[in-house]
Length: 280
Image 1 (cartoon, helix red, strand yellow):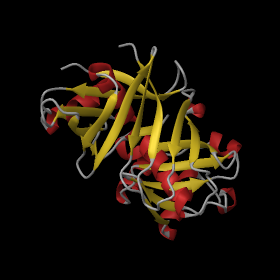
Image 2: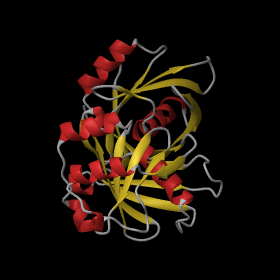
Image 3: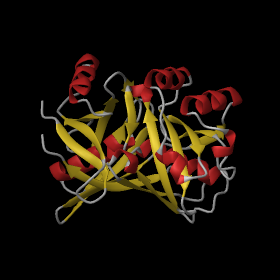
Image 4: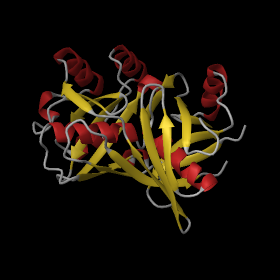
């Protein structure tokens, strides 16, 4: 079994979120995929196998070190780049556990990139009890929140609690207890908690604790980017059709994500970025 290690949403030749990618003739058993993901140790590993010979259709499953997840954005970007390297530039149809999406992979000179089309998005105001628990988890006060973006649970393939902070400085010093975060996220079916700060209407800084998967924090989270973009559309944010997200700065793994937002409420979000191969 060949395991590729690719950092998705890289900032040039640095940063990005590492993902494992396994492309084979058939998917291994769930037990083997879970074991491999734990051994790789990245926040997710994507496993892909062709659905039909000679087509660009693939069955894909994603595993974190401790559990399977239904969708992972950065591992999808890594997979798109890997498929482009294997088969050439193209759009690849992906069948996930609960959705069908596409990823476009390309190469330009020595740089690989990819863009995924997320599942449909939706959002709803956060339950007051969930919000109170999240504020306690991160030692935040109501005054720390940006009133322009009310707390919400947003979906873009998986669920994320979106908390917008007023200041970049408060975002930078964010800390929490991993076990307490795991209990909260798993209890409310949250894949990550997406903490964001709007530098401008189109540029966001983000941190994404991923305790539900046993990972303290993700340096780049494509699924959360899609969910955030869909949420901003829902609340009428003046996004101008595209937002850029800088993530991982406070982990010294600066990553860059772009989300393109159509006007149709609930429709898919296009999330793109650069991928870089990592040394074993």
